[in-house]
Amino acid sequence: MQYTYEFEVFESEGWLLAFPFDFDGGTQGEDWEDIAVMAADWLKIVVEDSLMHKYELPKATFGNELKNGGTRMIVSIETSLNSIDSVSATEAARLLGVSPSRVSHMIRDNLLEAYRDGNRTLITKASIEARLADPRKAGRPRKDVVVAKSA
Picture 1 (cartoon, rainbow, N blue to C red):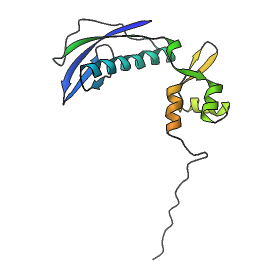
Picture 2 (cartoon, one colour):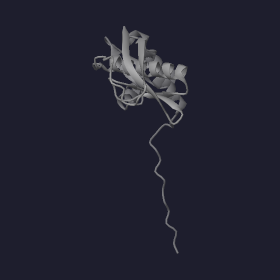
Picture 3 (spheres, rainbow, N blue to C red):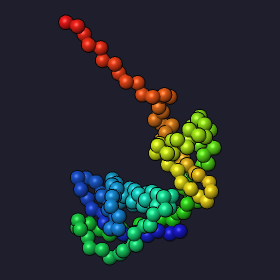
């Protein structure tokens, strides 16, 4: 499905900033080409999050008043639940080297991003890659023991 929103782009401290009129948040870029790509990436992430977690997006508005003296940029992306790069829980377990039940715990603890598609649980590859880039040791974190020195 196609999603189109209006952003205001303006310069600040040597960066181009892009803020959508219908959402909180925004992004930045080094030049006009970069800010166009960054705004499209930002919008894709927001829309895919709404699809995964089943919340409604705000209605797009156009011709908004420029708040920062910038320029209007129309950003349009095409995405769907099927375009989100994701794998099954079983495949996630294999990629992470853990059991499927551990994957369930990681989802519960918000260590992996998952969503339901019908009766299937899918895990985003981005969250798997983030987890692999930040490996944690097995077991509980060790509490450092402070030993008091006698005088």
